[in-house]
Length: 593
Image (cartoon, rainbow, N blue to C red; front, side, top):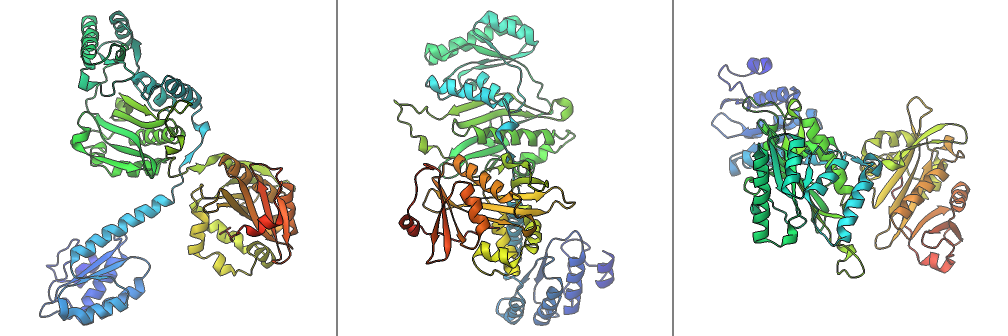
């Protein structure tokens, strides 16, 4: 502010946007842009010029072009030179300086919003949500509930069953007691303590409120009996007798200073399960306030999902209300994504509504009601197609590969899957690779600059853990924890096979790292249901040939091409492959590491 006060007339805007006034010279424009670029709170600069009697559009554009060269790469500069044909010469100067120029400021502002959204999308690509079955040890109990329901020909769980599943995944629920008679409901209410809520328990009725199946704030045994009888009569008058299985009795939760939210997931024909978060309650269809995301999620992705809704501002605290327990809400959404990821082959739709969110002092987050719809059971007499169930579009970071391994020289290694932030480690790794190792791996002399270029390493480190997976080894014995070996498995398009590649630092070869990483890739391929793994290496790469043969690969020497074609049949390991079959196979050069 002080620098701008010294530069501009006393009556300048003194706020953002910076109004330079009509008599601003090209030099004033240039200095103001420089000051704005140096400000730590500015992320980008939009320069708007409207031709006036004292304005020099062309010279101003020339000075802006000079300034942009000095700050290029730090902050984006956009321009809007208004004036049509009269400023075409100035716009040509800006175009030559690679400064995006627009006819009107609103178009430039819209571009800034696109740039911001792009940066958010890129940051999400760097997120690696972790998930493995061991995170939720009670998931086997969930399997029994889901299997029992499908075996009975049901496609909907009761509220009681649904809450059991949520509890198994660390999602808080209200205490719920089943009651098959009015007297049982009274005993349950007395045990819980008044006031209570009584809801219908049914395997077929999904929307309880629509049939009068929810009675709130009951404060006496008489009211509980009346609620039971009322629900029973309402259901039997509109549905079959078997649709009424009793009621559930729950404590009446104080929802003052709390917000009703909804968290759910439903299948998409292309992306599989898609998660939803937003404003909940009985008016969820009216508010239409929701955001979508693909599971699995971590805390950062869950937070971004919440920020995309209108109710997020209220959750942060408004009009004297305390902020809800945002951390607990993030954790709940993450656990919900784990449930969706692990049971996608059972669950078609799942919804928590309402999810009551309040401050930690008032209980945090609790699921008041839940609905779970299952895929139709697949058996001998079923018409359901198991292949019609779309699997999740995104695979989580495979935490199951994280383990320690002691090399033949006694060095302790950390084995894990690669992550986007490993790019600097890969750059350092290639500094320690000899020209001979490079040639035997890439079948050609690949320059160091090409191997560590950012555009290439984006493809190396950003894997989807489905079509591509890379396992790396980190030396835990060293002070820096440097990367010393890497192996990659790449699925081949149109075939149920994959090609593997591997690279081990020269000073770590012969310690068993290659064999360990290859065994991990083989186990991954088996779990993925692949038919075979293939590779091509030079005939002079004796170490890699030995590692593959030890792992069970069949090696075919192709003297014409000077390579060895390696093949592992995962369906029938004892079925040999002929040289003619190997020649028909088209081997590509995978990205490797």
